Length: 479
Image 1 (spheres, rainbow, N blue to C red):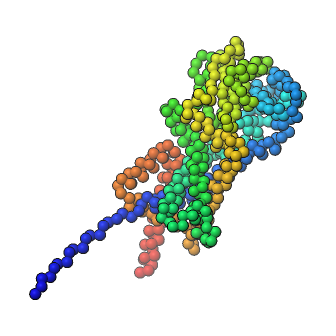
Image 2: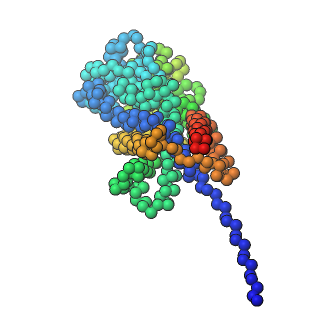
Image 3: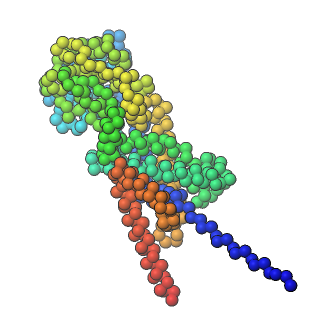
């Protein structure tokens, strides 16, 4: 009789946690894309239009900006006197921008009642003949004329002033988050799939939802870096998050140097955003000159500045805005190479009292300047503008494709169901803690993201309760 060998007990199954991070990103990407998508779409379309606004401006105002080149030129004093005769006593001279190249006009700029922040009234003068070619409102350091200013304000606040700025802050803040979540999802799918080429170039053989998804994913990865860049730089213009960025820069000593205009005192921080949503120092209605500046002095301070450190044609000359302050001659060339050197001159003694050179800027200040100028399309000229236009078109296309995907997956009634919930409950304790910490940090730095995250959570809970109630009602009806 043989002894029976007892069977070894089966090993208990290894408990494996369900994946939680990717489902969480899918749900975040879905809700943010659906609910914030319209704001991002508007920002993309208006931003693309702003990218080509300089060309539109040159066409619309060609007769104001361009004149026949002349071998002789009037002095700045003569041109200023012509402009003052044109405008009368209703405005105060605030700045002059000499014609940068032959064939262009000089801008003599004035402040007066009724102008908005960063706005000036400019009289355009032919430096060769003294003829006045135009009388227009100009905006900021960029010197935007009415058409470009209108496009800029549409992009910034939908022509709704300060309340409308919440739209652009919401769009800029969420653009980076949606793009980052989408990028993580793209990488996860790229690692798993065998047809990786389809995630880089859309497969034209696909139809229906798969075709839409292929285009959405492939366009998304090509515009990812640009979308993150636009989000990061756009946030710096915003109301609430922008203030946090300014505080952070000040705490880290990343502020932009500026010439000391007070003849005894510290220089204020220069604003790298001047010209697209922030006051341009000395040129807006907010800083009227205390008295009429002597036109003859403009030629003298410009000559001194050119001997000191001003060596570009794009220059703005600003008289003192108060007693005891200096004249400022500032380069305003935002294309590469960046020319924003400035010099302060005591108008009484015609001595240089301070100077700032872009070469001496801290690296953080240079990066800030370059980032703003690339965002505005001025850094690399036409190439920069074409890249921004293509980027804006790509972002807009992704939004539209995302909504098309949502619509294609909808059930017979209602709309498409969001990705499954419960991913956070499946996460380990450290995962939940990490998600909570990131959410709080992002919400504190980007307040509108924090509030909308709360809104997304409330909506998710409401949808969950509705789904449960319908399930109970169906169960009761079935019995």
